Length: 111
Image (cartoon, rainbow, N blue to C red; front, side, top):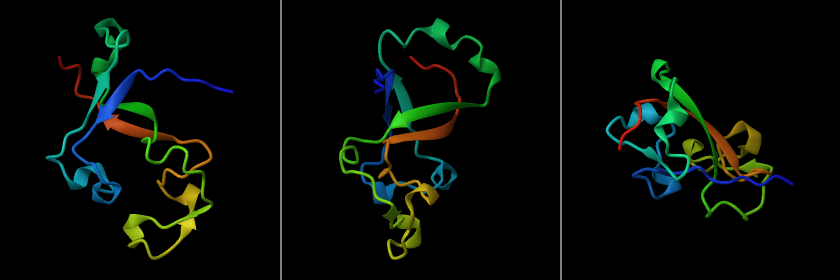
């Protein structure tokens, strides 16, 4: 059994899963950010990232999805919710483990 301690919370202007764009470049004005929690918000933990354009962020899907159980077939919003595909061929959160991975642009630390 694995247990993880969160190091931060992802904040974005999107509250509804059907309102989230399928790719971040589709709504360039929308900005999200990672709010780091103490003690992980220390600047020295990020020394060396200045030379990178992106960072990989592992996350746990939102509480609304956790505990819903996994589903082998899902109806992605991009397909209009009419066609089913396998969960591993989608970005749906209904997976055996509620974890996701995103490559995010790195803009440095803001205080």
